[in-house]
Length: 221
Image (tube, rainbow, N blue to C red; front, side):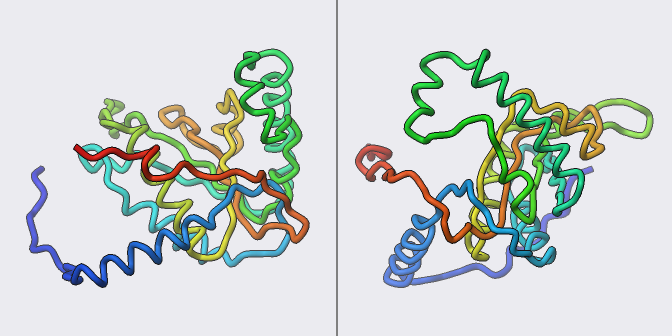
């Protein structure tokens, strides 16, 4: 069924000076975002997480299929199971699966298979991709550009959490299918990544790295 077309509302008509200021202020804020691996156990209101997920749900998607699901885990006994399963896969990755080139690329970051943040942080958000949906008669409806759409939504979620004052970590144990069972998600969904979020520990350390400058990530023709 064709969607009803309605007039666009809340159109912003900023002048160039205002847009310049807003864009610079946003950049100055978002460039402070860093990946954190050491979290405190300080609690975070669930309503904050919900608001950020609602923000992620505003992302554009192929044919407006909205092919995402955000499964939230607060601190509970399930988190111990998630950590055990993730570390099992990560240990296999670091000791057997990863190529020498991949391990060399990770070496400066100092990462390993130990993932205590999976238990420490107040929330884990497992993001699932729906490649298709199922109708009541069992037939499938394909979701177009599902991975790309979920990637955009995830970027908005990370930005929303940063805007709220929370730190994040993207974690992708491989394979991740064990997360379907833990979060009780159907077979037509596949885990995209685990997003860890909360407050950074006061003793947390981050790699001393810099993002590429504009001339290295952009061209104008």
